[in-house]
Length: 140
Image (cartoon, rainbow, N blue to C red; front, side, top):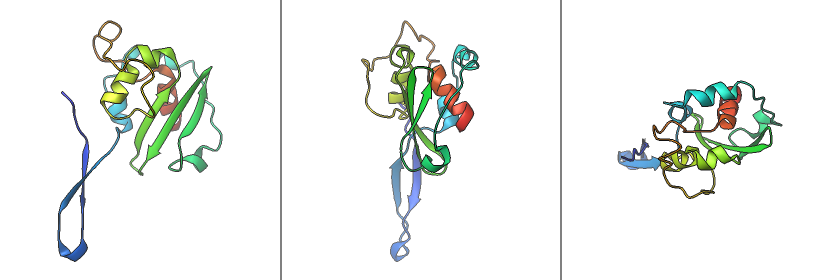
């Protein structure tokens, strides 16, 4: 069951109100909902480093370095809407990339097969990897 997120935007030209739908990405609360508790626990030992954070917010994709992995976060709108990706294997093979694509918060293209990981994520809990969790926890 695919859930589409839409916001209503009203046009005020010529005093006509018509509904226009704009597709948006997921919010932080949606990405973190029903997350595997192991991801949260494992992220506690991780420190995140980013340069010019405030300058880059809402302007362009931000690159974070977490251990040996690169995390990209694109923030759109002031609510904010987030698009994320990571270069770690857990992101690609343990369900995170699949959920990001399915729930519209994937930044960039799918690097793996894009198939649901029934064996490694049977409960659909691996929404993000520990590296992205650490970035969201520390910066958003």
